[in-house]
Amino acid sequence: MGPHPAVAAIRLAVRRVLHDILDEHSRITDTTPPGSPRAAVSYATPAGTPTAPAASDLTRAAATDDTTAREPSHELPRVTSAEPPSTAPHERPPSPLVLVACSGGADSMALASALAFEAPKLGIRAGGVTIDHGLQPGSDLRAEEVVLRLRELGLDPVESIAVTVGRAGGPEAAARDARYAALDEAAVRHDARAVLLGHTRDDQAETVLLGLARGSGIRSLSGMAAVSGAGGRYRRPFLGLDRQTARKACMVQSLPVWDDPHNADPAYTRSRLRHEGLPALEKALGKGVVEALARTAQLSRDDADALDAWAGQAEAAVRDAAGLLECAKLYALPPAVRRRILRRAAIEAGAPAGALFARHIEEVDRLITGWRGQGAINLPGKVVAQRQGGRLVIRQG
Image (cartoon, rainbow, N blue to C red; front, side, top):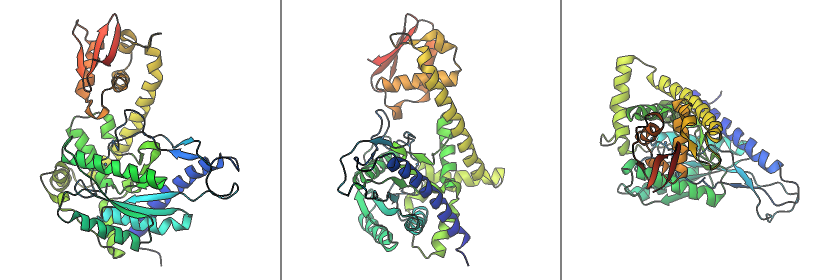
């Protein structure tokens, strides 16, 4: 008799991701001739990319199951030359290491259990990391409990990392930034091929609604990517599974879970959306709202990726020989493509991506579409955009 359907579902989701990781690992190692320095994966984040910009099982308050990751780049790992390893020239390179970010909540514990079951069968090393945000009394003891549970599952290495949460962007954003910075550091230190996050389909639906409420663009409505982070570091196997499946998998496996009280605290926007907003939508519109929102995220992501690619190809054609943007050529582009070029130019000039909002880009866009001799536009990061002689100049002010 096979495993419970919930357990089978989480294991299948993790198995698929691990196969992808193995394929990437093989492509990298197979391109290195025997006896030559072993290829190493560079996870350096491109300039201007927020750390963990970004959505996890890790809470805003102690490694949660519901925070939204800002979206970093989706590049495949970059291969760079490294010093020869201590192993013999013809020795097989070490198997890849995959870490799970675990808060002790149902989503991340289910993910950890599935990783512990599937990784050994594929020859993959599996470890775990829990983040202690220090925002609740006894958070350090709780983190140590999670470490013990992960070790009992057979994961190795396992560690708890304490972080200091700042104030920038509000408590949820600050906790998220601190958490992802710690996960990035752990991944580099352990030379991990990937870090698994426990976001579910429910988390995806909440992320789409939050983006909609903010009046964000299609990229925000696309929610969380299955693969994100520098070099494709972060993987989210559970985006196609609902939260109840993960909880059921923990229950039938007798896995103890911790329910973060912050996830039920109405002081936090996501908590109100989870316990009040989504239930109200389902009452008004019927069941299936979560699935529909998750489907919207995928469709939006496909559209956003296509528009980004179009903008990348069009950018060279709208610059003059000196590299300045030509207003007439920009005007001829569809607004969605033009604004992407403007946003990219502002970031390249030094505007922080996380502080550059749609209203900023709309103001710059009016220099193209509604030119009335208006003055310069001030952007975050002391960047200034102004129209000069039919050219759009974006630079540090």
